[in-house]
Length: 126
Image 1 (cartoon, rainbow, N blue to C red):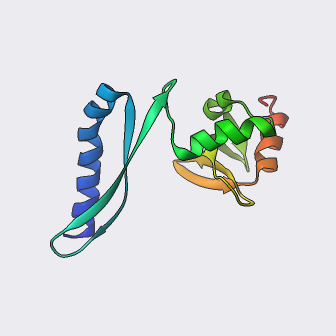
Image 2: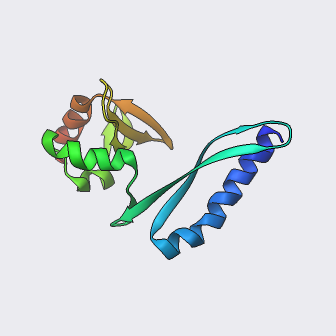
C-alpha cells in the first residue's frame, strides 16, 4: 500500500457511502489513515443530518455552546469576510483559546470567538 492508493481508496469509499448515507439520513467522512505494506486502517465518521447539515461533534458544540455566546445555528450557513477572506463557520471546539472553526478557501482555520463575533457584527450578520 502507498499514500496515493490510500487517497484514491478514501475518495472511492466516500462516494460509495453516499448512497448508504442517503438511505439512513447520515453523512460519512473518511478521516485519517494508517497503513503498512499489506494493510490499511481508515477512520470513517458518521454524523446525522439536521436541516441538511451533518451534525458533527464540532457542529453540536457550536449549537450548544454558541447559544450562550450570542450565536444561532443559522450562523453556520452565513458567508462573511474574516481577515479579508470569504469565510463560513464550520463549528466550534470544546475548549481552547481558538475555538471557532472557520472555512476559508477550502481550508479550515481556528479563530478566537471574539474575532468571529466582531466580523459578523461589523457586517450586520450577528
